[in-house]
Length: 258
Picture 1: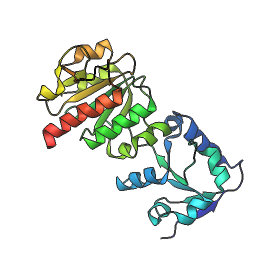
Picture 2: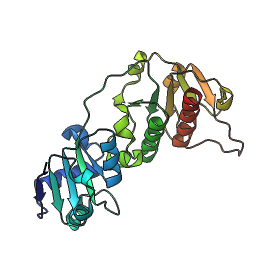
Picture 3: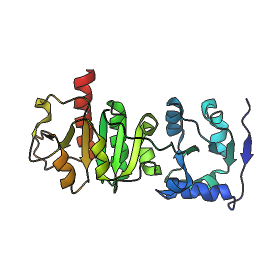
């Protein structure tokens, strides 16, 4: 099947205005129902998970060398001069292509599956990194409480490196939504709990990861069935939240799956 190709040369094209909004406004996807995934690596990762773009957008130079998997993925391809693409890109060094994809339908919280809870984690890089760890270690549900960085924003998508497309993501939740969870809630703490490498961690469970400066909120701490410490023989006061998440999720996944 031959995919239609549309050439765009005008800066006033309405599509460019929408793409610019999707690539620069972290929450535009909520209103538009679509999100922007820039870069061939991210695009191929999405396709590998069965995602299908509505639209593929290429630079003129990128179109000439694009892999068939990318040029045949969407219902329509758009090709534009490299300079126009640079205007809509959110990257300092623009990629050669990007996908416009429909936002997944709202998911329902699954009460009994391995889960990661994000409590006001605000740095997009940290959020994306945690999503990567969740996908890698078998935690397929991520629940983002209000105040957490927008999960489908371009920066979180880039940091997630394709993890989004293998996860069930639910965002903007109130703390009360966690009432439906039926798995033990574990919280990391620098001053209480047992060392993680000495624990038999329940499975499935839910790990709560908190705000970069304030940590997990008091209300969520009060819900925890178990407090866990990460040993730091080097003597640092605390770990970056994404690093702490990677350790916790790895230990959980390793104990279950070897």
